[in-house]
Image (cartoon, rainbow, N blue to C red; front, side):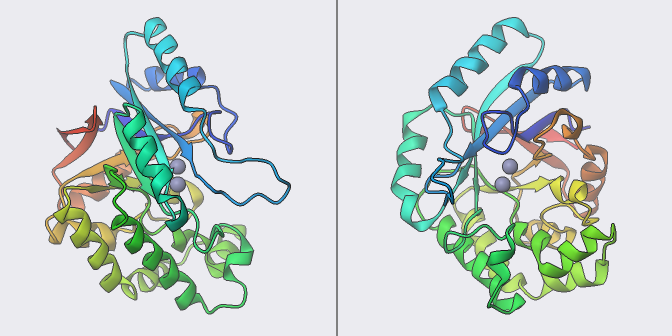
Length: 280
Ligand SMILES: [Zn+2]
Ligand SMILES: [Zn+2]
């Protein structure tokens, strides 16, 4: 049984208004033994109105966890971060990781050519295959960047936001054949990414955000999880990517079932950057 959520956002992230304390109370309610907060740090996030977005106030973030630890000793609070990597901010990412004692670092690709695939502009003036390939190429560069992370986040994040997927979502539909095809066309480059991660002792996560979003699959897709397992990948963390309390631990029973069906026996948690394995 999965008793910990390892991808959680709070009001310390630009895209959440949930107080950290509320999220923690919900984790206790769910009977979790620990929670790992992973608020966003995306250096150089493009801003249209000059507002600085996705920059984490790290000292305040650590202070709040220290305060909550004293009030809620019944649950272990781990200090994580979701660090958005892109070429022009690699030095900043490397410095941040050295400066603070994080328990766990998720590296993510949120921006390609300074655009988030979440936005329609990413998909304009380019065919879908090239737009997706560009995302994996950026991820391949990021895993080679020298930033010292623990797992790579939502490897196939891009597949959630293709124009067709967005249209399906609007109509509350999903298309499993399209989803599988959209994964199988890119297995070569994903394999290249995995070989580097595995060689470097890094892992991936299963992110139930895709299930919450309505794609009928976690991120990454089951086919990708199987590939990771076939290549010898063992480190896999479990996270909901919750931004609201109602999504904490989202579909974790399903995640456990999916991981087992892909060949995994254990999931991973990180404390002080050290992995520990738990039976699924
Ligand atoms: Zn993310
Ligand atoms: Zn996230």
